[in-house]
Image (cartoon, rainbow, N blue to C red):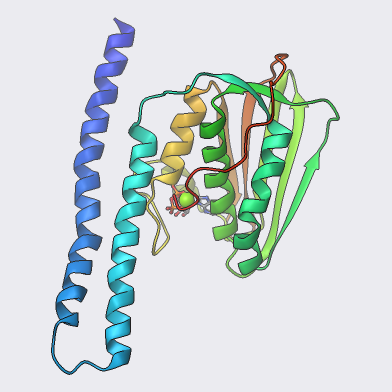
Length: 244
Ligand code: ADP
Ligand code: MG
């Protein structure tokens, strides 16, 4: 009964979300259509044409990222939970975010406080997805450069991953709203990244918490139960969409 109730609520929520997604996707597509129409006008300078073309592409990119983020949220679980080696996972993800960090003059630092392997049970792809979203947010919070610190430790039989940035930080009100659909403070944000993260982490039995101070930075802490399973092999070869 509880389960059914839960599912009914979930589907209702997905339906509402789908409705707002179509609304959100329509805006950038309308914009794209407008620019493409304007491109058909006579006697436009090469500069103007190029500008319109860029805006048109931006609109499509924006629509694409909204859809990608939504699908990541809505798609049912296909993978099975298996042992994930957290340290290996983190280390193989950092090269993928390094270019993004470089562009904003962000230094990346990683520290493992315990020598033991940190194994958790979950779906590797989804775990990567969460980390990438969080790391991207941290870097995006430091447009003028800064430091991204990733730290792991074991605490009370839990694996604790802390992702800290020295970026813009968040107000109390902002902190309250993160993770709710479409809440974004970014010009090209979708406001779906954290919604996906929060739902994936809770599906995998983990916990996530943010602390933040405006102008100083943000710390995101993720906790999972430490598992004593033995991972078969390291998985993360290629992370999924980096554009979500
Ligand atoms: P998006 O990144 O597309 O804006 P997210 O759901 O990933 O959507 O994040 C929602 C909002 O939460 C961001 O727009 C930003 O205002 C805030 N936020 C998330 N992470 C951070 C961070 N590390 N520092 C400051 N603000 C953050
Ligand atoms: Mg984001």
